[in-house]
Length: 344
Image (cartoon, rainbow, N blue to C red; front, side, top):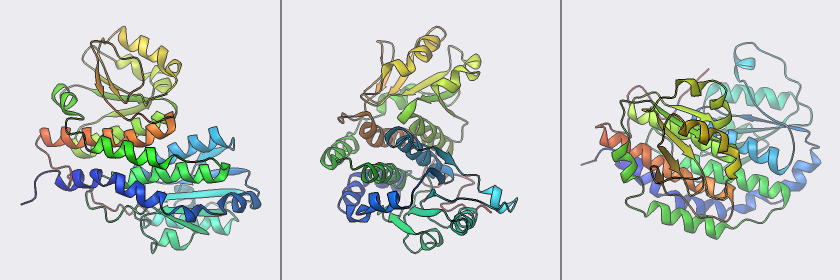
């Protein structure tokens, strides 16, 4: 008999294997650097929805920091609703989607190709419409994902984003460490036990991140909303200080996503202002500046912030899973959601 959350739990635990599959398939990136340089790319747009949109934010930050090109996030409705005529000369469009089936993404991708963009699709289905219309398809290799809340496919999107930019820049990748740390994290039985017991659905939850951690903050908020039927904010610490912090109370449950090697200075101001109202912070990852009153959801010990961010996605997924089960829900089948959302 199936137990609540068993499918989601199984798919999270498959992450190290998915990472191995991706790292063993790096031939897909061969000549990618020369190919992209030949296209004379001057700007990048990323096309995505939902969980994939959070991965898009990670890829956006990677390209901006590692390559220096301007990167934007597309507005599919500019094509699907307003029938805009695109002008995408020297533009790289990267479409990210687990299923590769959403009609609005496909329509925008086709319009981008017609507008002379170079199109890369990153999907979990090589036969999907999105993959079919791309100049180059990069498979997620995550295998069938049955739980409605995406987990291993999101992790795969983060790793492939990293490998794509690494190939573009000629950077060497420490694949062994990525797999090793992911294996350690998924094998840690009590990874989020204390946090699950300490957090309540009856008080506001805010999840914050900065830089590379920001996409995981957004994704953590989305996963809790999908599986636990509560509203959660996922924000950058900078944006939080620009208004939302005014709603902070001593009862607000504040999570800060802090991968190892994250620049502590990036969150110092937010940390200080939060503590002036609320003395307890929940930290996700092995970075940050936790105090004795805080609770830490331990993350990975990778050699740099970017790799730690990729592996720490497992931690936020485990929290959402176990928090949902503890509340009496089945995170495999959240009410009102389906695995493939076909927006027009």
